[in-house]
Length: 429
Image (cartoon, rainbow, N blue to C red; front, top):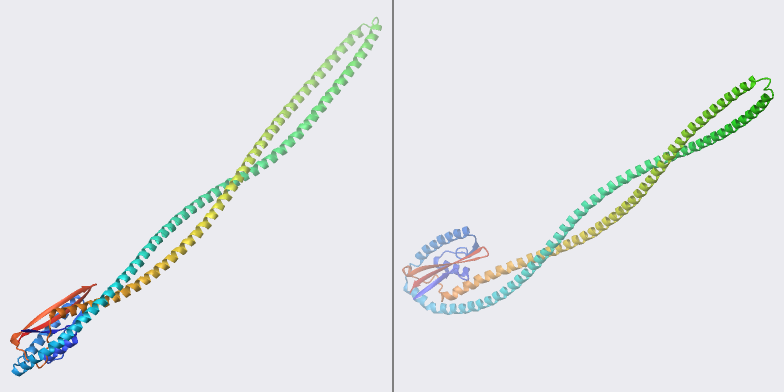
């Protein structure tokens, strides 16, 4: 018949007390028990347990060397009572295991609910992330569009400056043309006055010519009358003075020659002066006509430039109005998008805070579940180990009939290692 002694079971303090009764040396829960540690800590802890267990075996060998028949009899008599007590404890442990399993199921359901809530929060955060990406993309597009509008505005400003320079140049040309027109008008007026004066001079010369002609004709007629009278006188006295007729004839010829030469000279002078005045009047008339044509051409150009300037001003005003409207609209849209992004970032921050709180709750519940799982496993192993016999200081055991069984149970959950060592001492009665 084999009996087992279990150390480091569901109640490590009670197991250490039983072992202290066997060895006569007090043990703490640090000697035989379980702890969470890293790999290096587990190795150190295993080495310490082996050393302490070796010292316990040495002390137990010295204690179990007692072989009195009376103590064996008392031990056998107390075995049934201990078995009844252990069976009652086993039933209590079984009921406790069922309760813990039920609590474990409830905790698992709660953990699943928390996971679903966390997933919903994560999905909500992902959904907001997508919207935020879309809004950031829209803001990027709006920024690019704003840059394009700025570039277009700069180009329009350059066109405006170019048109303004053209306008200033045209205004300067217009002022020069107006000044030239004024000068030409002045020259035309002077030429017109000169033409009037020349016309007056020509008319005066014509009148003088007519007057000279009339005087010449009068003189000629008077001379003819005088000649006729002289001829009559000469004819009367011809018989007495024949030489006078010849003299008068000579005088008449001389007078006719002088009159014809004077008339020719006057006519030639008048013709030369009239031709000169006519040429000057024609040149002045042509210059005046040319000046009038230039004035009309300058007026047409000035009118066209005024129309072009008005069109340019209208285009400039329309473009400035359009740019102002675009800037206002883009500013309002940017403010709206910034408010939306700020609101979504606040919602995302709140969702992250809620999610971190739920994760902490989940971690706490997971730790509780892990501790309950470990306790359930320990109780299950106790149930599978069968009846247990705890030795007291009054039970003598033959050291030759003892055997040591060591079971190590390790559980790795979320990077944490749970290690529990089971020590079973079996002996044969």
